[in-house]
Image 1 (cartoon, rainbow, N blue to C red):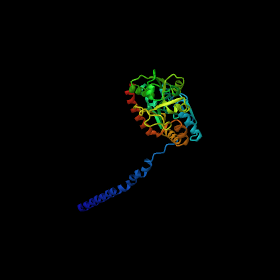
Image 2 (cartoon, rainbow, N blue to C red):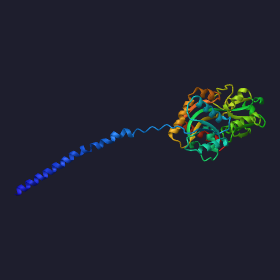
Image 3 (cartoon, helix red, strand yellow):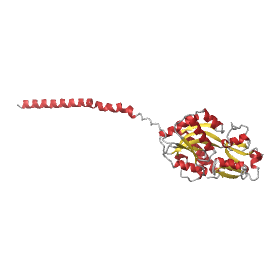
Image 4 (cartoon, helix red, strand yellow):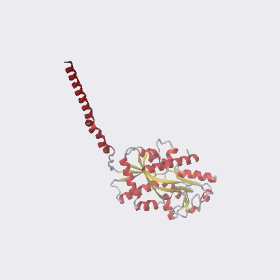
Length: 344
């Protein structure tokens, strides 16, 4: 009897071990589908959805930070015409002038529309210098960089009937005065550098915009003005004004007879950049809309002929992050120059 009981117990234990072994062998097979699921879903997770293209739902304001007839105004109105003529966009574009405060009024206006893509602002070097010298509460980093469109040479012009033909003659003129756009701008920096070079005291007269500068020189209110070539090209062509110096590394393509400041013994090189920015906080799709549009504008023959060549602006095209990197470099350069000139 004892032997029979022991045999039964032995058989029960053997069956239990066999059942356990079977369960252990079946576990990997049961879990196999779960292990393969992540691999099947991996491609979908790694492919982000393309952003939907943005289309403006109302007219876009093209903001000029200076008055009518100035550099901002000329650039934006030329661009507006090209967009319409070349059918580059179905959107409506309206140029709006917000002059004053060396560009501060226009910048504050666009800054106040953060997150709204229906604004496009023209930018020049005052976009960098004005926030450096004034506590505006914002600077170039508080906007969305769209495109750098060109480099605008800084020059000095006089009335042709003044008889002045070069920088030495200008600085030798009694009670010499020079008009520029605002305080702490490129025009102002150039004036301080000329003062330091010859130890003279030029009476610098700041104006709200290029148009006011031109009017002042036409009325003999100042001896000279420091401006951009496009601002006075028509007056140079008619013989009313004479360009006596350019602050570019090389002579101007539009007027190669004019000697650079360096050639005249003044180690000064400065130019304005011309570009466009949008308010902060716009989406990537909205930003791409403007970058694509500016790229199309830059690729037209009309832009090169009617704006760049007609206004003596040197071609230099950058977009988005590349334009932002350029602005970073310019900000560092102007900070140094304005500190040395005692303007900040």
